[in-house]
Amino acid sequence: MRSVHAATAPREVTDHGITAAVERGLVFEKGVFPSRVDVSTSEGIVTLSGAVSNILAKERAVKIAESIRGVRAAIDRISVTPVARPDTDIRRDILAALRQDPATESYRLSLSVEKSVATLTGTVGSYTEKQLAVRTAAGVKGIKEVRNDLAINYRAKRTDLQIAADIKARLQWDIWINGEVIGSTVKEGKVTLTGTVGSALSRSRAFDDAWVNGVISPGDPCRGRARVCGDGRDRRGIGSAITRHPPS
Image (tube, rainbow, N blue to C red; front, side, top):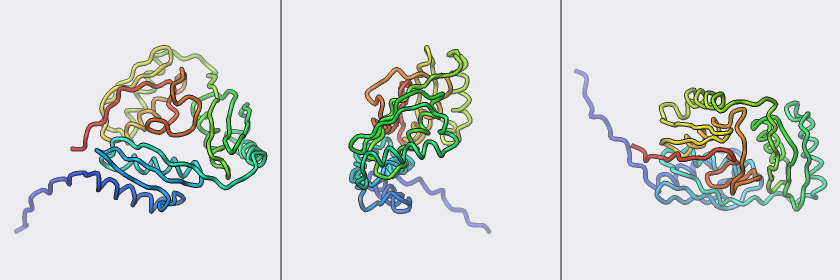
């Protein structure tokens, strides 16, 4: 006779467990250097502090924290302490990286570097192009911060209905937020998301999905910076009333 076992109740998610899970994630993530990143958790909110050598490692650390079950939000207090390099060399390498990438070589933008902080200005044709330019710059050795002052100049005007339809489709097909109840409204190209999600990562994904062709950027306290602000992204143009429910 086959034995019958009672279903095991799901383990309660604790702050200590979250901290341990984030620390394990950092250990296995190449390039983050976990010994230099401190993790603490309070009521499901993870705070990351310490120092890393480049912007991409900083961003990966935040992504790891957001992906852990039970995390409501990730606060990024990690500083970037890059290898010291002359600003002229950093600028030269960023321009070379942009020219060598077939996806960015045609971009019309200006670049300045001061005290290892790069500032990008000019226009691009989409949010994706804007993020790609910033990521290319962030990957150059010696960069401490990238200030993103690029403007988006859409090649064709889109209606709010078209934008809303695209956002709805992207939310429905995103496996990371499958089943989440998220609504979106669009007014003059400005998007507002509402609803409840189950994790900080789902919330981040919803923001990313909302950046479809036609969304504009009115500006906010995170203006112009490719760095963590609030929950970690440059999300100008997208308002939010999304909340996160605790894990069941």
